[in-house]
Length: 116
Length: 119
Image 1 (cartoon, chains in turn cyan, blue):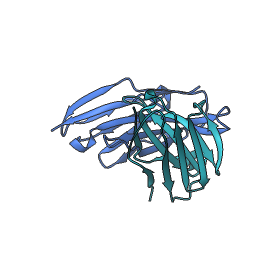
Image 2 (image 1 turned 90 degrees about the vertical axis):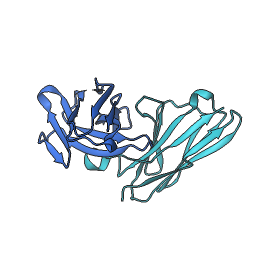
Image 3 (image 1 turned 45 degrees about the horizontal axis):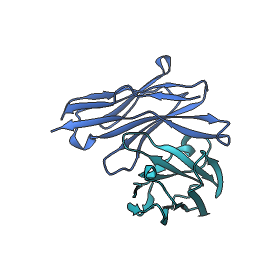
C-alpha cells in the first residue's frame, strides 16, 4: 500500500480565514513533504519533515505554517493567504531522506485551494 | 546544481501509436537517481520508476519502457500502443545529494510533458 491521503480535496477561503490542510500516511515513512503546484508548472518544494522535525523550509512565507504531530500526520496551517496562493497543494512521504529506494516519494491527490 | 529538461511541452498522438517522452538531466554528482511520475487530471503524482546512476539497464513494464543513457545524460520514456488512459502530464525528476537541503536527497523536477492520446 502506497497511499497518502489528503483532506480536504477542495478548499475555498477568504484572505482573512484560517484553515488547515491535512495529510496522512500509514506506510511507516519518516519523511513527509509539502509541495505547491501552480497550473502547468512542476511541484515546488515548500517544507520537509524528517522524524517529525522540520528539516527544510524553502523560504516559505509565514502565512504557511507546517506541523507534524506524529510520524503519520502532517498539517499545513493557512492564515491570511493571498489570491496568488491559489494552487494545488501536494503532500508526499518517503521512508527517509537518504538516497535509493528509501527516497521514493509517494504523493497524495492534493488539495485544490482557491483564495478569494 | 541539478537540472532536468523536458523539451516537449505537449504531445498529441492517436491511440495505439507509440510515443517517446524525452528527458535530459544535468548533475555533477556521481550518485543520483532518476524518476518518472505521471500526473493525470485528478492531480495525484503517480510514481512510475526509479533508476540509480549505476544501473544503465533499460527497463520494460508492460507497455512502458525506459532508456537510460549516461553518455547523453538522458532518461527517455516510451509508451507502446498508447491508450486514452495514458493522457496525463509526465514529469521526469532527478534526486541527488543536496548539502544545502539538510544533507538529503531532494527531487528536481522537469517542467513536464503533457501527453494527449486521441481516440
